Amino acid sequence: MTEQPKFAQIKQYIIENIRAGAWQEHQRVPSENELSDQFQVSRMTARRALSELTESGVLTRSQGLGTFVASFKSQSSLLEIRNIADEVKERGGDYTCIVLSLESIAAIAPIAIALGVEMDSLIYRSVIVHNENDAPLQVEERFVNPALAPQYLQQDYSNTTPHEYLTQVAPLTEARHTVEAIMPNEEICQWLGMFNEEPCLQVIRRTWSSQGIVSFARLISPGSKYRLGGHLTFKK
Amino acid sequence: MTEQPKFAQIKQYIIENIRAGAWQEHQRVPSENELSDQFQVSRMTARRALSELTESGVLTRSQGLGTFVASFKSQSSLLEIRNIADEVKERGGDYTCIVLSLESIAAIAPIAIALGVEMDSLIYRSVIVHNENDAPLQVEERFVNPALAPQYLQQDYSNTTPHEYLTQVAPLTEARHTVEAIMPNEEICQWLGMFNEEPCLQVIRRTWSSQGIVSFARLISPGSKYRLGGHLTFKK
DNA sequence: CAAGAATACTTGTATATACAAGATAAGTGT
DNA sequence: ACACTTATCTTGTATATACAAGTATTCTTG
Image 1 (cartoon, each protein chain N blue to C red):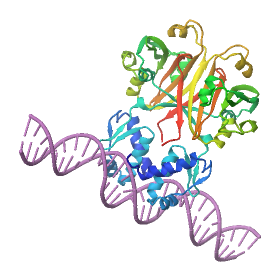
Image 2 (cartoon, rainbow over the protein chains, first blue to last red):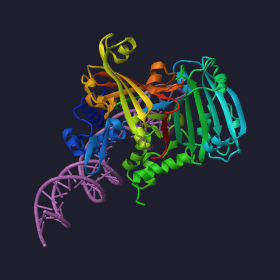
Image 3 (tube, each protein chain N blue to C red):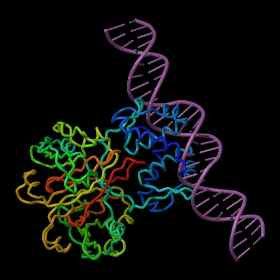
Image 4 (spheres, rainbow over the protein chains, first blue to last red):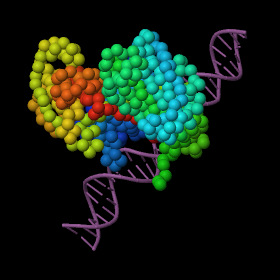
């Protein structure tokens, strides 16, 4: 086992103490100077340990006051929304996709608002079904602002996903998501090849570039076949 | 407007270039030495800018090679699972909760496995309904490992949530979540006061402490009343 | 020509130092 | 007793320096 760097040793020491319950929530942890004395390192090295643990949400710091164990309540648990193609490939499935629609339409009110364009103006729309082992796993309905991706309709989406293409032509600056449980309508049932009605997970994703709202996508998956996962660790 | 620190100015300079598309994905960005020359700062200051942007996922670094614009694909989008009481209070709603059940039961197989205890051994179970303006918003069914929280049944959960109590007595080291869309069964409909069947969002959360699995919770909300939100920004 | 050594560049770790700025407690003068 | 100053602790920013270690190129040598 190779020796760990000093700042990592100090990080581990702090985490151990918090894990063991020796240092409770909101309690003060040793200052930079105390740590540098205790571990015989420079203040900057002790500082690095404290700073990185602060960055990762384990500690909070306050100039003049000291460094404290962060409240667990504020440690938000995060869920990861992953690229479905990657997810399928990672678990060894066979990923394919079918482009059901790739067209230019007039924006109806809610979509015009979501994209920040005039009502009835022309926008692009694509519907793509993502399959795992030839069974529909997710349908992606996407509305695109043509001003920011004028060549959107001319692309081939059998290899690169719309999301990948869009991040290339309009660098992503922000993305917002909501996740809901919905009952699929007839159209969605048809897309997903569902016979009986079962609930679906719907992820709505809006993405911004520096020039404005790029696209608005609905990702819908059958509740029985798809789930989002995420975990929060204390390590590192 | 107060002047920004130098490392922050360099961070901003880098982000501007990526946002504007001048520095594309996987392209090299200036090295620590180049930046320290260009901005007339020490290498450590330039280094801080690059390190922090790496930490936040904007850049990737490789010893001996250089620093590169991270691929947008790898920028995982994160969803936040928040405390429901906080969420309700934050949007100005009136939060209340009702403890429907607080008991000790024998673990059936799937729950025993999830908690890592022997089958048929005694475990604790609580069912709590969280209300916003006196309307049920979420039901929380929780199974607790008694070895790690022996006083669980004696607590008053009208003020502090079970999750808060558990993080106090058994410091959290890890949490795993899955999110699914499900159809509620009769029991859940009753708890949530739902008449007609509508889909629900189910979050399953398992939490670990250093001594083992602490608890296993199902958080179920009507799809029409609850959604998860999250966003990913490029700033800072 | 090809294998290995020297090199120049990169990031990574670590130190010593300086001053700024926020927070608190102790001391001082009126 | 009160307001003010001072001292001392904390974190925050910034620099100059040193060496380690990974990568790629160039040069040397057989």
